[in-house]
Length: 169
Image (cartoon, one colour):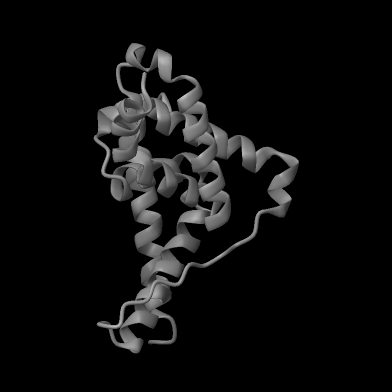
C-alpha cells in the first residue's frame, strides 16, 4: 500500500483514535503519543490492511488495547492530568467558564466509571459508533453493551444532578 492510499484510509478516523486515547489516558500529550504510536503500527501493517474487514474498528481496538496496556504499565504513575484550554472570542467569558466546568465534571464522572462502562459510553455517545460495532470492538454481547451504556448514562446523570443541585435546598 502506498503512502497516499494509507493516508486516505487512516486519516478519516485519526481524530476518533485520539479522542479514545484521550478519554482513557486523560493527558493530551499521552493521547497524542498513543495516537502517533498506533498510526506507526498501522503503517507497519499497511501491506496487510486489505485483509481487514474494517480498518477503523481494527485501529480502535489497537488504540484501546495500547492505552489499557499503557495504564497498567509502570509509566502509568507518571501520567498527568492536563486540561486543554480552547478559546473562542465569540463566547462570553462566563459561558466559556461554565462550558469548561461542565466538560470538567463530565470527564471526572466518566473517569470514575468502571472501565467497561467508560468504554461503551465513549464509543456510543462521543464517537457515535453503532451497537454492533461496539460489540465487535469490545467483544461483548449486544445485551451487555446496552446494559453497560444504560448504567453509565444513569451514573453520569445522577452525578451531574448532584453537582448542579449542590447547595440548593
